Image (cartoon, rainbow, N blue to C red):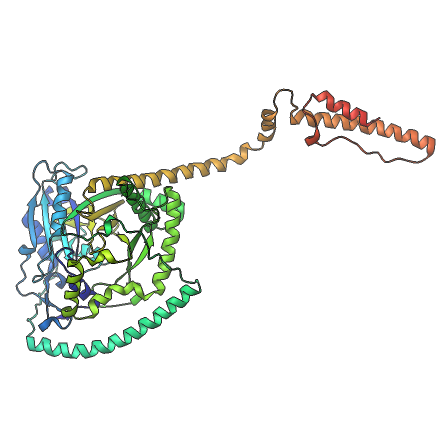
Length: 567
């Protein structure tokens, strides 16, 4: 038995029918790699059960303390039934991508049963008319409560439910004993609650003092302009309206090689490229609906706090910062550069601000106090009165660079799904693995009734960015070749500029040299005559005008002028 951490409890306290607090993912699998070239539903169940025995997290259920006066506990369920959590579905004909997206959106909108282990999995067949899906391919959609796992831990959960080889049964495993917990008695929970209340009071006082000190340091850093202050007055959009209980789902795919090309050429991070695509997509979408604000929109970026806090036994170690995605800029390269600077400022702010942990406030107080506040907040749509406009959450998760298998079938695509909060009705989750980057779009159905069009906006935004980078690369390569051709350019340029009756530079230089030579000869003769008559030498000064003063007449005029100067 283990008590939930503060942030884990926050996600339990924030649970609401309109905004369930689970995350999910959908993988598409190729059965040709499995032994025999096909996979049975019983084989998938057996594979799940075999792997879940090793990880107690899948058998854990919540146990609340009496009166919900303290954080709940995880207890190993003695009546765990894997077949309750794994369901078998099939798309109706024709089995296309749109039908799959609608099904995933409906499954993701349903809250989990909070009295059982907080996860579900669905094996989906009938994907016959989806481009890119192998023959006989199937999908596995999983969802898990956020109190069990955060975004950074999602990749570890994938390793839990997947194998590294197509025939896992060929790898011998030592038998393991499954441990279960005896449900704690109300007396035990009540006593533990009294003790915890005393400990928590001391921790809260210490935490409040530390937070005030950190806020003071933050204010001083902002005042001295050492810490950039993120914008907190971003415009509100349709994605800030109250979130309903229904969802939409879509996804786009990009080549990881193309994403890295943009990243390397621009000297930015992959996350900046992702944010630039999101900013471009939201700009196009809102512009289409005549709702694009003049100022930049902002998004929330989850932060992995494991490196900041160190080792912790909490399932969730996540914070968040706000980043402007510069939707006011139409030029994709200019937007990318501006986002890079905004991301750097947000990172600096996040490293120095205790506000990145603001979500923990929902888990500090006991559920008996927090749950009524959350219900009142959501049911009365109080998000409309918040000044801060965060249009989306954008999470970037790096997947494994090696193939994964489920019941012997290789995973060929993976699409992650986040969660919506009462004031943010759009979530982008980016997942990269095996040379492919997927961007999953989860939205509130009332805010985004046309998800397929938004996916087109995402694809166009990335293509425009990629084309701009390729054009810039070609321009730089052309500039690099120009110095070799510039050596002969001045003479040609001068001839081109000289119009009718004009003198080219080359003839002018030759005339100047001839006239100078003639002038020098006559001057020398005159000087000799002067020395012969007076015995003194006079200084000789040529009056040949510089090139800029030469008339645009014929070359003979220049020679004549030089001859006169020798008289």
